[in-house]
Length: 137
Image (cartoon, one colour):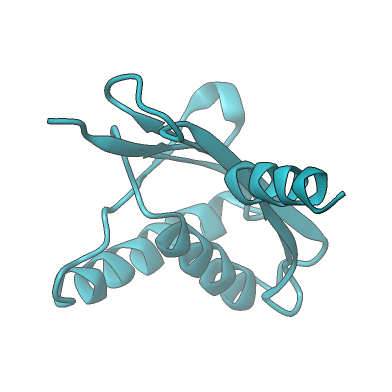
């Protein structure tokens, strides 16, 4: 059986070590909300590591995770801490075995001050669009 995974690893600067501590409360509340969903989204991991600094959260998948859950967490942190500017991440969707169209990725950019998606893209969709353009000629 082929399994599919969504992989990512990124940082979120929450400004201060105190905000980083509060971010864990936001994460715990979000994971509790997620656990009550049927089915729950695949959770991501959150940690602080010395190499990234005391105010930069390391967000990553444990083998696979839901990107929308990550985006929800980031927008909640941005609202709680008054974060501004842009933040983004990229992901890879991979199959456990080689299958046609089993590998693609994407990227997502947020405006932290509004929580709005500024832009996102999927390489799978991009490729399909480019091939459709070729076929239309």
